[in-house]
Length: 196
Ligand SMILES: [Cu+2]
Ligand SMILES: [Zn+2]
Image (cartoon, rainbow, N blue to C red; front, side):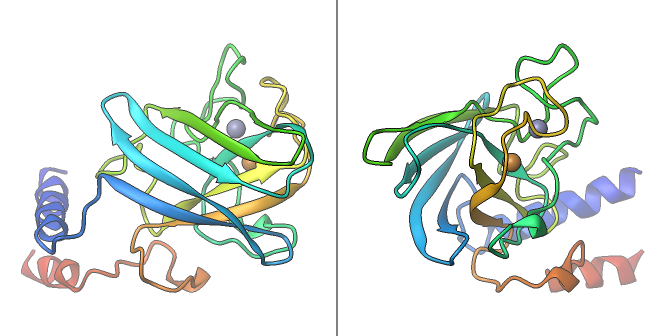
């Protein structure tokens, strides 16, 4: 167990030294037709990850939004993104007594022009190393739904179809590939394991 921590720590140091900042991240958002419809900026904060979001092309009103478990946005249904990010095995919903998923966020509201300009907080999450990192593995994704999230219904707050998606990739420049899931992309990890 301790050896694993040492290896992970070494990897963190290695990833910090290449100059890539892990405290902020920009995510491009796409609709089911593949059009870019906005972007989210993620910032690491002491109590979670702040999500600044600008979107267009939504129906006016409330929409559910969550961080889902895979960094793969394949339209039009975005099922490729998987379920909500839920490392603690909780129930869904910010208002559920046994909730919430780490990936659960408050609803966003589109104005009469279908625009969203919102600032949300993903409580308890990080961009850095650890169980609650949204860059864990190959990363995760940000998914917007057709309807509002009621905050209690399982498994996704009765929020309807997935209509927008953005990939939050652990390696921001790598292309998406479902087959590389959970496969280390850092060559130093192979070296570390051989030294064991
Ligand atoms: Cu969702
Ligand atoms: Zn959820």
